[in-house]
Each structure stands twice: as structure tokens, then as C-alpha cells.
Amino acid sequence: MPLALTQLRLSHFRSHMTARIELDGRPIAIHGMNGAGKTNILEAVSLLSPGRGLRRSSASDMTRRPEGLGWKVSAVIDAEGRASEIETWSENGAARQVRIDNKAASQVALGRIARVLWLIPAMDRLWTEGAEGRRRFLDRMTLSFVPDHADVSLTYEKAMRERNRLLKEQVRDAGWYGALEAQMARAGHMIHQNRCQTLDLLSAAQARTETAFPVAELDLTQTEGEMPASADDLREALAESRFRDLAAGRTLVGPHRADLYGVYAAKGVPARDSSTGEQKALLVSLILANARALFEQIGAPPILLLDEVAAHLDAQRRAALYDEICALGAQAWMSGTGPELFAELGDRAQELHVTEVDGVSKVTAL
Image (cartoon, rainbow, N blue to C red):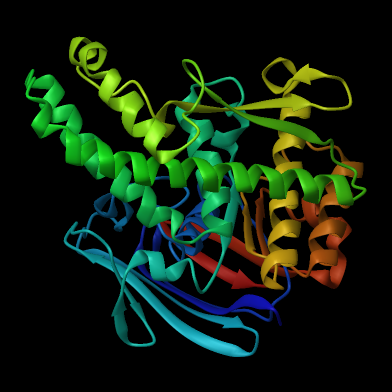
């Protein structure tokens, strides 16, 4: 078992009062009616990685109502035969906490135990909506290769928030900006390098593998101009942009202005102009390429969370997706409304049925 959850426990998490799920490493097919609580299970698993989870919800939003006391997610993750016990929780709406093997830990530490990737219906609009969602999508993939990317991003964002505060207050003394811009330049250059490395890894993984899913050509662009080539260049660009930034009241130069541009390679059509089904297939292709590249890098595939994955996929591509997941040996958590959506998996997957009665979700292993 290269990397898999072997146990998942939920307490007062969204619609789940309590749940205990025993797992054997195979993919998991979760089915049930809409609103039964399927996505809540996937969200709980997503909290075993750094960040706010697949819904990007606050800790207080995840607690079961009407009690509102707090929630807890516990799991045992087996990686290369070594089991790690992970607990993450929030009490009374406070920021979530993490404990690994009974010791307090940071969220960044989660990324060194398990790499978790997800694809959810909200991402179906990735190519047609704003750049922020595409940056977040790219940064999740980058985080899977470079767990420290979260720390670097946090450093950059904190320094930028302080610089933006000075800009809004119309502070013009250069002495206030120098140290912040130096910090932003160092972190910003690392962010850009990490993202570029990720695009190279994804491109290589797509080129080396024959798959039923289309290849996506990816490029990292900037809202204006080009990203400065070095940390020193970025520091100079920030200094030169102060007067323009003062007028705007915010920072207009740096990796936070990046965008992910995708092209459906076989047709030469921008992803944003492709059909709904083609856009979905491109996203699936990238998630699979990410998983393959991780397998080559660390010797184990990531845990995959694929919410309503069958939407916009015909039966042939659905079967191809399941075959690729099983060939990778990935523990994929997949949700859908009915068991027929997972028929091509057969006994290669565990099956869970989720029902809801009087606002309480129940999980039954079949």
C-alpha cells in the first residue's frame, strides 16, 4: 500500500454527527442522493492537507448545525508501511488545529505526509472565470511537488498585505518600503520558480504517457508585461512601481498577478473556448498528469478526491479514468449519485452508500 487512508473518523463535521470508515487502500466509490453528505466526506479528507480544504470554507462553517460546538476529523494514513495518525479540529469556530502522532503540528507538516489533489464541480468553470481561481489551481498542484510552497506563499502574502496598507495610507517615504519589497522579491521569485517547475513536470508527464484524455499545453502569463527574471529584478520592479501602486492603492507587480493559460493541444484551441466536455476532460488530464509526475518524483501517487467526476464524461472516458487510477495505484475518493456510474470499476473499488435522515448523514459500506 504506497499511500492511503486506512481509517477516517468524523465528529460533528457538517451533516455527519459521527462516522467511522475503514479502508483497504482501493479506490472508494461513494454514491447517494444529492445533499446526502457525499461531498462532506471528500472535504474532510481534503483537510488532511494544508489549506482550507476543497470548499475553502472557514472553520466555523464546517461545524454541524444547530450545535455549532466544533468538529473533528481523524485519520490513519499508511505511507510506505508507516502509519501516521492525524487529527485536525476546530472548537467554537476557532482556527483549525493539527496534531500528528499526538504532537501539535503545523498545516504545512501535513503536506509532507500525504499529497492530496482534488477536482470538484466548481472547477468546471476554471478556464472561463477569473485568474485567481487558476492561480489557486496551479498552486495546489505546485504544493503537491513542493510542500514548502505554502510557507513561501504565506511570507509573500503577509509582506504584500503590509505594503498594500502603506499604499492605501499614501505613505511615500521610501524607507518604509525597502525591507518589505526585499522580502516580497525573495519569496515572489521562489513562487514563480516553483510554479514554472510544476508546469515543466506536468508537461513531461503528459508527453510520456498515452491516455484517453486530451493533452493541455500550459503557460504562465502575467496580467501586465512579464514576471521579472530574478529576485533582484523583482525588487527593482516593485520599487519602480511605487507611484503607480500608490495611485491604485495596491501592488500591481509580482506573482499574484500571474495567470494560467491553457490550450487544447490536439485542436490548438484555447481551453476557455473549448466545449464544456472538453474543458472537463482537460482538467481530468491535468489531475492525472499531476498524479503521474508525483509518482515518478516520490514513488507514490497522491490521494485523489474527485467529486461528481462522471459529470460531462461519456462511458468510454469514464472507464478510461478508472483504468488510469487503478494503474497508478492511487486511492481515489469518487462521488456520484448512483452505483451505475462506477460499474466499470467492479471489485477494484470499495463502495460506500450515503443517506440522510432528518439532517443527519449515515455512511454504509456495501
